[in-house]
Length: 287
Image (cartoon, rainbow, N blue to C red; front, top):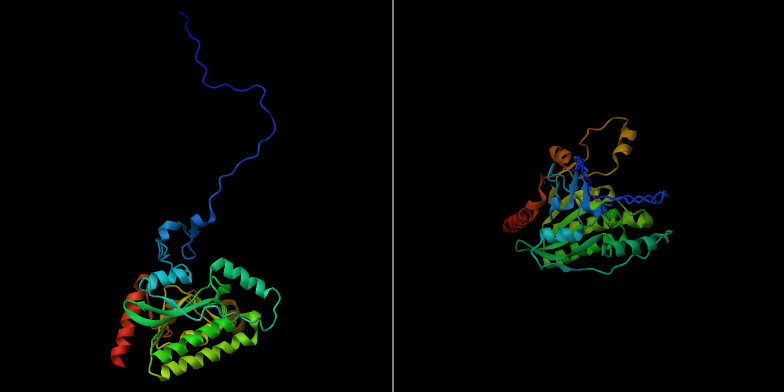
């Protein structure tokens, strides 16, 4: 018997194989599978965020759409949308504006940057408005102003409390002075609602800035905010360049506003429905 027996062949290399470089196939990970937390910078598996969209590492509250907000806040099946289908007339004939609106409608499924209607929250009927930053950063134009104004007018006529989730990058530049006029228009409707002895609750979400902050967002009888929300008027760099001072690290965060008396309370997203219903009941008993 031979000392070294012939071994079976398991691999055969083709001596005539091509020397041409083959294209390398890189594994692709879908963009929607993971998210990076803006708070702690962790990369998070989307399913770990849950329906509330909250970072499991630092508690950062992610921005959510109006549809997601409805699902988390109201009693199922009770939302009746109102004032749908109002469209801007593009008062300045701003280049590319109509095309941008069309793209946003296709992308978000919304007509505009705010959804308005009535709903039950833990059994309490309210007039409800939800601004959605996915639609041109929830900038305030004539349609946003008209829908929110009509919401307050309806609530005043029906003697309903108003609950408004704010989010905005400010006035919509494509509509110029017409967008700025919405600040006074909505504020007048808020005042009439208040004069009728009715309750107005605002919940500041990330981000609430510009003309929205300078008007109806800060006019609520009670002002709540979600944790770590950015709330302010002008941008941080604009202010620093104007006052020529470095601002605190947490400047314009909800926690900073609470400390300085601009916000009544910071409420976690999961606790908002119970908190809203409790405040509505409390006001009804007081009135």
